[in-house]
Structure formats: structure tokens, C-alpha cells
Length: 125
Image (cartoon, rainbow, N blue to C red; front, side, top):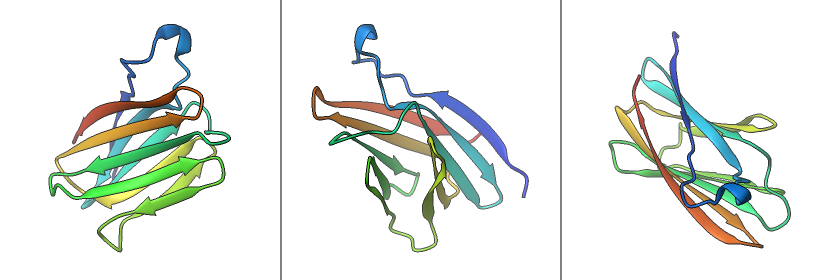
């Protein structure tokens, strides 16, 4: 399978520069045949009560979601053959059916400062 890829930074517009400690650094889309891999790269792993929720929606308008926390890692998809795994210590890979475009909603929740949300669109390279 030949993969092509595209990397997109996760720009957190609502986060002041002095407080720019976002968990998600960037994400990228790799594709081949009928499958795609969306990789979420973390700057650091959430600790304590902090967590990251990544929700992806393809052109089928169905949600897939992953919860990343210090002691938890949970995946949900409407398809039994899609999957998610920790690709490395700071990367999470989502294996999904191919679509032309993905909307990715990143919600970062901190016990100390609350939530921030970022919407990123990924298009097939």
C-alpha cells in the first residue's frame, strides 16, 4: 500500500501565547487504497484530571472519537473494522475508512483552566 500524507498544525487561536501549553501539536492524514490513517501528535501527555478528546467526522457525517488522558485511552467508532492505537508515546493513530475530507474537533480540558476547542479540516492530499 502506497501512502501519501499531509501534516496540519493544530492552531489554538483562543489560547494566549503566554499560556500556549496545548496538548495537541499537529495532526496528519495518510492515505492508501480504501483506508486512511489520521495521526494526532501530542506535545505532551495529559496528566492528573486533564484530557484531550478528538472527534473526527468524514463525509459520511458519522463521528469517531478518542479520549486521551493520563490513565485512560478510549476509542469509539460506528464501524467495527476501524481502530485507534497509541502509535508512539506522543502519537495516536486512527485507522478509518477513506473519505475526501475530515473535520477534526479537538477539545482540551484542563482542571486548572477549563476547556478549549479547535476545529481542523483535513482534505485528501
